Image 1 (cartoon, chains in turn yellow, brown):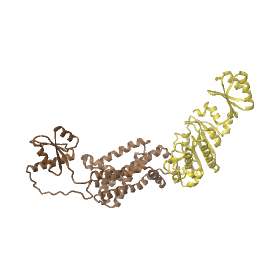
Image 2 (image 1 turned 90 degrees about the horizontal axis):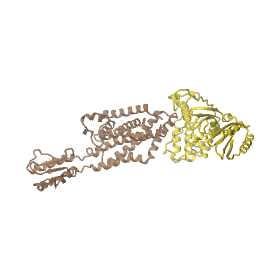
Image 3 (image 1 turned 135 degrees about the vertical axis):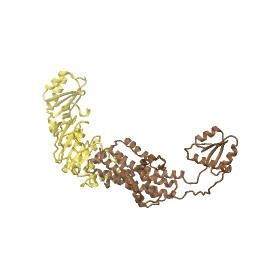
Length: 293
Length: 338
């Protein structure tokens, strides 16, 4: 990890994104005061981390969910929350926090009987029980089914609607686009881009991405050259699966592409277009697909 | 801290196996040992007589003793039975009569005395001093009276170290410790919660084992229950501290199991749980006495058997408290929270 420079504003949702092993968890744990950095300064809510009473006073104001925590299997959901609640001077009641995460019916259920999504909501509930000003979430939705993921997004939205600040890590670019006001993209322990999702996508210089592949397999180098010169195309990238064009004006580039391919007498095996996303930003910055890593 | 201790207890009593090993097992052990070593007067000893001149007459003489059963055997069988412990001693008739036995076996020693006695008397030896047997069957001097306080001490040691050690390492492995560190919880509260929850189980353990000994074997507590309570309390705190120390660095359950056995095995053997530690060589006794379980067992026996008051037990109590305090402080210092 080197040269990280981050500022998170009060009231915003900030996302740290990147592939596994990019250093997201290390970063968030340094911010949480759980890992001591070799060098550098961290200020949370205007205060640096200190041992003892000052540190505990700061922790009163934070809500933290860690990636790997497994809560005690044999305890009931309500008991776990009562335990975490007891650590704080100010907190929600168990019923209030159960309502926040929609686990009211599971109050008497043992942790071991919960589904993955419910366990994750319980972990977030443990973070929310202290009525935090700042919420840290480390990969809150990794490994969850789409429905559970949407439930968690809803919990985060409601927390923000009440004025809370959120710092989360994720390797789902789609999640970051939906939830975050600003994001920082990390790779190999460095921040390689930072800004609002819109700004980052705009930095590609185009709104659309066209992916296509040919039945014949390989693509001649001169064809790539021709594509680069084509009107409305801002970047061309070739990969093992085909060619990816970043396109400003889809209505001009797409007919031109089809005409070109017909003229060359080659057949398409695949053609898709989509709005440019943070995934494409990551590919443009690193040359790798996020999901490959 | 109250909530932490409460969670600890809930996790424990929802684990049926743990409940058995802590409460059930010592009682089963006390029951089995109490049956095996009950005082029914001295048993009969098996002796072999090697076939030879005058063998049957010799066997008959020995058989006349109420404490001996003599059998005539050929040399090979006699050797075999002696080796496997089916006879305590082999007598070879002749002049002189030869006693063949293993001097390290208690019952062989007894057989040697009894056989000699019977043979010498048969040849006309007279008793010069009048004696009378007074067998100890009064509660307080039987093996079970010795055993129950020892089992109580051993149980406090085991439940302290197992109960604390496993839950700490499990919490560390599940990253729960790290999660707790992310809250304003005080570190000392976390460690103290173990000691607090031990207090509750302690009451159940002591009542179960002492109550069992009293109901089945009439093992009485001669001293005051307050002294017994105070000593078990200190012992239990000391072992909880020791458990924390054992678990303070270990990352895996396997690792901590090894450490626990390393700590507990020597004490099971040395600290006079099943037999008196005075059997060990004199040079070892000071070390044995410095062990917390030895000190606790001594104090428990003094209270239960001799009816001693707490005031007379300064040294063992100081040893127990010192172990507990030092372990706790060191554990808090070197504890691995992540």
